[in-house]
Image (cartoon, rainbow over all chains, first blue to last red; front, side, top):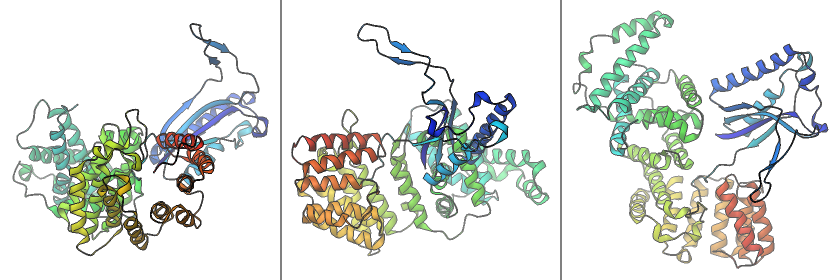
Length: 135
Length: 399
């Protein structure tokens, strides 16, 4: 089994954003989208592949050190052009093909007009901490 | 939770498969029996530290049986008529549940349990989870922590595993190699969290070996012992990976090495060679060398040839290429790589090592860096980045 992270974005660079963004949907369309994602997570819990799921606020700030003895410096709100992560799901699956399959399924969540948005999700394998025993 | 009394918890775990066997011999189905014993185990972990029973096995059998009946009764409304009849039969007065009156648990039952939990219809991960619970006597929580998934996820995985094998009974002729694969997988995951999975794999393999006469079971145990012997040398104080060639061999556990070699030699003497014996032989040759320079690479290559005859995989060929490089020189090792796919894990790490041996430091540095990008874990990635830096600086090749 291997763990993967699936990252959902509020917005990504133009070449990847080919669906109407959520801020232009009706409330019931948003609800349907969320319901789809919850049902997806429930299926993963049932199949024993669910590890974690988290949604992020679209608001936030960049932060960095202000230098020795100085308070941290912030830069916000995020510019409209920034790739913005909406949240993630962590799965533990038999193999890469299964991770792809699940990501494909999650991608087809409904959006405007109830149509699947087929959004681009980022799929990232976890790095383990220690090697398996083989030398 | 339980007192940090490792011996008591270890003894408790040993009892689990036997108690499952007893319940099944009374007519309980495996899935419900296993759930009942798990419930009893959790209660034992809770109550024994302050109130230890005199007859531990008897306590576990009595409590597990009670829990089994509870489960059966609570599912009554959903049960078919035949099952209700069975339940009523099983709910006879518990005269047979008094401590000490049950027969000695049948060794065959526990062996059957090993085999059932490695059923061919189970995915490897499911077989591992089910084996660790039913044979290993670990709690769902412990197994979940070891594999870093939420407890409900692991519980569901085990529950589904049991559905998959529902209808299979204990007492079916089974495939020992599937059991060995499962135990090897437990071993391979290494140490994670509170439960040491390597120690667990060794314990379960010893248990299997006590019940069955098989050169390959012996070979697997020998392999595990020989690997485990090196654990204290494998990581530096700062947690960094230390390659076999660089390990401080005085830190190797000599007792485990001696035991591993003894078990291996006896197994090889039976002339029933298998892949685990071959792998153990390679590990034994490393263990035998006082220093890395004393390593008998020629014999190691011969054992890789034996292993290939039993199990020809690209990974084995890749590892063999390293040995060939040591025995016959880096050019020979590199020649072995030519038939292999670059996308293999550790391919670039192996090529980097061989090129460095051949004096091509800068190419080696680039290859180490590429290997680092491909590494599946942080310890290896950091190690390979260090190798890249070292090769780039021309500090001379590592053994």
